[in-house]
Image 1 (cartoon, rainbow over the protein chains, first blue to last red):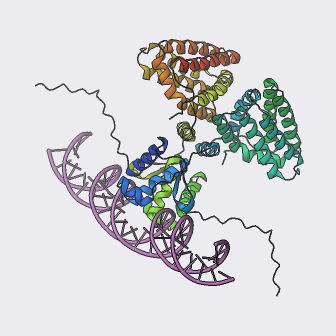
Image 2 (cartoon, protein in one colour):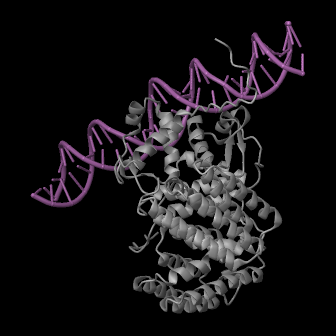
Image 3 (cartoon, rainbow over the protein chains, first blue to last red):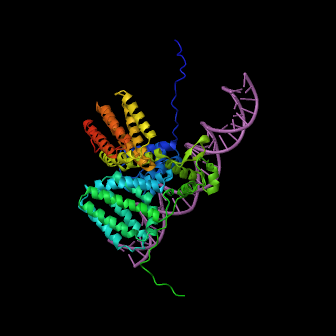
Length: 249
Length: 249
DNA sequence: TATGTCCTATTGTCCGACAATCAGATTTCT
DNA sequence: AGAAATCTGATTGTCGGACAATAGGACATA
C-alpha cells in the first residue's frame, strides 16, 4: 500500500455549520413550499414545534422571526402562526426595502423607471381589457376632482394610476417590480407635487393621453406618452430643486 | 362643568403595540441608515445591546435575526456583528426569493424577461464601454470553449452573459432586478440546456449577434437579437417538454 | 517564524418562569 | 332562549440565568 503523493493543489470545501435557528426556518419553509402546510393553515404552537424539532423555544422563535419577514407566515387570530402566500405588495415592499438599503439614488430610480415604464405601457396596451380601462379612468377622474393642494391624495392617485397601467400587463412579476420602483420614487414624487404648482395638471394631461392610447391599444402612442410622462417627472425634480444624487431613504 | 355630548362619528386610530424585538430592529437599523454606525463598524455585543436598549438578550437576538436577513449586518470575525451595505447580489437574492414565495410560473418569469431584456439590451447598447465589451467577449469565448455536455458551466456562462449586458446599462437597480429574473428562470434554463442538443450553439450564435450590436452601439439591433434570444428560450422550453405553467421552486 | 497552550469574551443554545392576552366554554342576567 | 358577563386554559412576548463551544489574543516554546 503506497501513500499518494501530496497534492498541494487540493482544495477542501469549507465546512459550514448551519445554526439550529436556520434549520428551523428551513424546515418550516420546506413544509410550506411543499404544500404540506396549506395556505391559511395554522402552524403548531411554539411549544409543539420545540417538541417536534427537538430544539428550545428560544431557537424556534429565532427561526420563526425569519419566516415572518418573508411573509410566508403571519400572526393571525389568537396570535397563532398561520401560513400565508405573500402577494404583489409583499414583493414590492421587500424589494424596495432591499434596494433602499443597498443605497440607490433618485437618479438611478428614475433611470430604471424611464427604462421599464414606457416598454410596460406599450406592451400593456396590447393586453388591456375593459375592466382595467375602467379602473384607469376612475383613478383619473378622482385625480381631476382632487383639490390641487391636497398633495397626499394626488400622490396616492398618481401611484394608483401607474399601478393600474402595470396591472394591465397582467403579470404579477412586472407588477411587483414596477410597484417597487414606484415606492422608491414616491418620496421624490411627493416633493415634486408639493413644489411644482402645475404638477397636478401636467400629470392629468399625460394620464389622459395615456388612457386614450391604451384604449386604442396603440402601443407606440402609449410608449411615447409614458416616456413624456417620465421625462416630465425628471423636469419636476429639477424645478423642485431636488438633487438627483440624493440617496433614497 | 358640563359633559361634552357624545360624538358617534368619532373614530379612534387603532393603537398599535409594537413588540420589543421589532423596536430593537428598528433602533439598530435607524442607527445604521443614519450613518452613525458606519459600514464595516462592529456593533456592540449582544450583552451590551441588552444594557443599552434595556431588554433581554433573547429579545435582542430576535431583532438581530431580522437585520441579518436584510443584509444590513453580518457575522464577521469573532462572530461579532458588523455593519454592511447589501449589494446587487443581495437585492437579487431577496427579490427572487420573494417572487418565488409568492408563487410565480415559468411563463410569468419568461414573460417578464421578454418585456424587460430587449429594452435593457437596446438602452445598454448606448452606454456600453470597452471594459464591458471585453467582459462580454470573454464570457462568450468561455462559452464557446465549454464542452457541450458540461451543462452546469454553460448555464453559468449564459447567466454571466446576461449579467454583463445588464451591467452595461450601469444602473444597480436594473442590474439587480434583471438578476432576480435570471435567478427565477435559471432552473428552467438548466433543463433546456440539458434537454436540447443544440442549445449551446444557438445561445452562442445569439450572443455573437448581440455582442456585435452592442459594440456598434446599435440599439435596435441589440433589441432585435435579444428578442430573438428570449423567444428562442421559449421554444427551448417547449422542446424540453417543460410546461410553462409550472410553479418556480 | 511557526506551532502549541492558556485565557477571556462572545455567541448559540438551553431551561424555567411569568404577565398579558386571546379563544372558547360556562355562568349569569333579563 | 338569547345576550352579557365571567371564568379557564392555552399561547405568546419577555425575562433572568445558565453552560458549552469557539474565536481571538497573549504568551510560551521549538
